[in-house]
Amino acid sequence: MLAMNFSTLIRKAEEDIVLLEKIVDDEYISSETFGFHSQQAIEKLLKAQLMSKIVHFRRTHEHTPF
Image 1 (cartoon, rainbow, N blue to C red):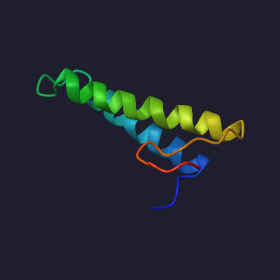
Image 2 (tube, one colour; image 1 turned 180 degrees about the vertical axis):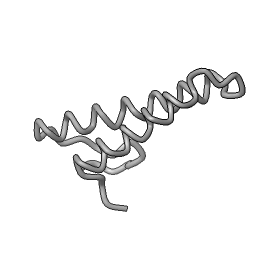
Image 3 (tube, rainbow, N blue to C red; image 1 turned 90 degrees about the horizontal axis):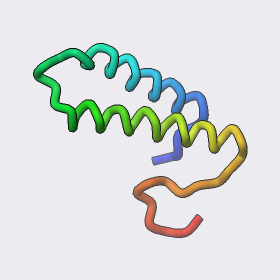
């Protein structure tokens, strides 16, 4: 799979945030699930910020040096 580009990361982070806004008051959604999606949104935004500053980083699940 190819690494996501800046625009894709921002769009996916926005999707995560929209989801969070919809589930924040849902009593059936656990705090663990809410926290997971929060972490995902933050990670995507941080990666997009790094990309905007031209900072190279490894994919989270990549085990070989870049």
